[in-house]
Image 1 (cartoon, rainbow, N blue to C red):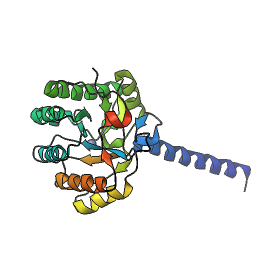
Image 2: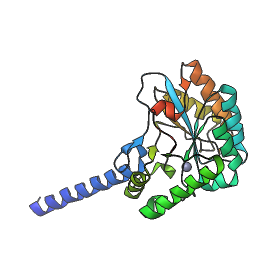
Image 3: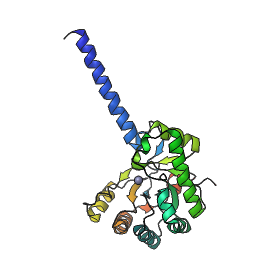
Image 4: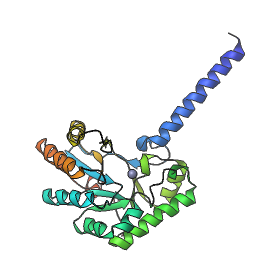
Length: 238
Ligand SMILES: [Zn+2]
């Protein structure tokens, strides 16, 4: 093989490797390349945190809140600003019942990772304003839509002083074909000290899934705490 072919092959291999790295760095919220994200608590104790994305939802969120109340469990809700504007009373209820409300952008736009830093910041701030109007709290926790992180989001986080929250257990509860029992089983099998569990209160049967996770988790010696307790961080501006 001539030296030129060898050099070309090495260059090609480096190009492919660099692209694989860039895709992984953006797609995995826990990659910590562009943004430092909290994906689990540093603890040996069997403490785990429940997090719900994309709400509030007209029908399902109230049922989820009922289950949390019955079991006296505090959770964290990563809210979409436009949904907050539609159902401010549910956000006020969350705060009133001791849950943490957090930021998941105003519009949950599929193109969010492609936006400029200014547009990213504006969208995050608009969600923060909606939460403030509904519940009087300024959220400091942020979860990027789809868990995708890019440099613009990293810069926006530094400018806004927010903490990024990922997860260590993805439930795949949005897969409609999976029964709620099988989703619960998947989560329970993966429980570990300090786990942050990703759920969605907008999903049909979310309350049934939650009930199973809490009862089966507790039967295995796990306690459910909110993110301020698990991560020991400030969750609101004041
Ligand atoms: Zn989401």
